[in-house]
Length: 488
Image 1: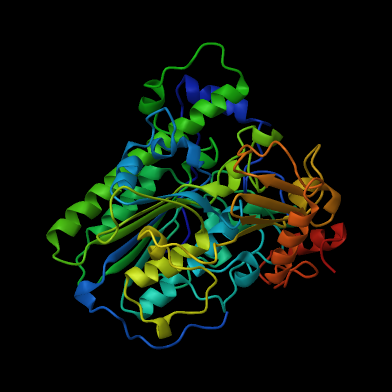
Image 2: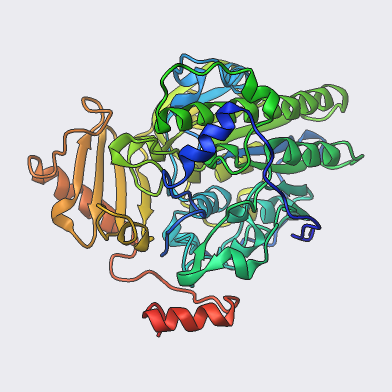
């Protein structure tokens, strides 16, 4: 494991007009995940038999995009050309138009991707707090399974919310998270609140580290996870040259500047992904192996003012309906899947593509996406679950209620249960109301009862949260939490 240390404190870089304007606009405009006032399975089989020989097994590359909305991709309909590399990847593979994350919070969502489990199954429920903030040791990750199958495993991360603090190093022989500029005690403040701030790195630095690792000689297939954080916040902006090349419309207000910067960050991230994809393609053509499977998806989107919410953490479409692209030798180019799919479907899909025998796979809730990619219909459509139980995320923000939210999507219907204020629960028909503007909760009680019963059948934790208290919270913070009544 690569140590999470940094020998230098990153200082603010002089920026272009867009970056400087964004820095001003950002002040007080958003409370970023890990940057503001938020809070609160059985083991895999030991069998290492595989359905494929080593030479037949593809490399697996997972690229996760933090805080990236689907509607900012050209392949999802955006008019601005800021994702040309990702659009080309989608053209050569499969695109999922109705993919749902299992949370709109970075660590919780990533934990579902990497385990194939909904949050109530893997145990990492919140970003902020002193419990439910670490992937349970009993939760078996994709990296652990593939490592047992002889895969070389490496992860290159870009921000604290996917660090080893949350348990994401499980199964990785290389876990590169060298972006900390503060001590953990400084990052985690009162109430267990995570303040990511400058404890992140820009896409070019993460890409460079991943490219260096790819250049090594190896005789085994590999799992590579690369995480990008750029669109999350303006703390580490794109290069000045890129920002200076973007013309700014006249008369932009504060939110307008932030929207322009958000697009610029996605553009820069896409450029870096292009470098990574180019190297992977070059190696695949020359190594004589089975090629590479590449999965790209975001952990969640961003409010950007929709539903009167700028950041993330809620369960509306702009925050929870994510971009999801799968490309590989056996994936038919130009495929689009319009069925409901989930982040938890990533792991079983990749295990199947890697030829991992069924007895070597842990119990998971996700289902392989390959039948849908082949155009096969399912007798029982998939239900998409998501939750937001960081109670203090609402209590600490003006004009937003204290609550815990649980979502279920069935076909075109989307139900959001407000656990503590059920009268504020929501039901939308996305077929006729994709922007979720018309709440049908009171008009369609039969659908509400049915969806709530389906939600209860998932054992999502209506009356319990399965806490696993942390023992690595600094002592002074624990005392302050006890004084505030958060700990007993």
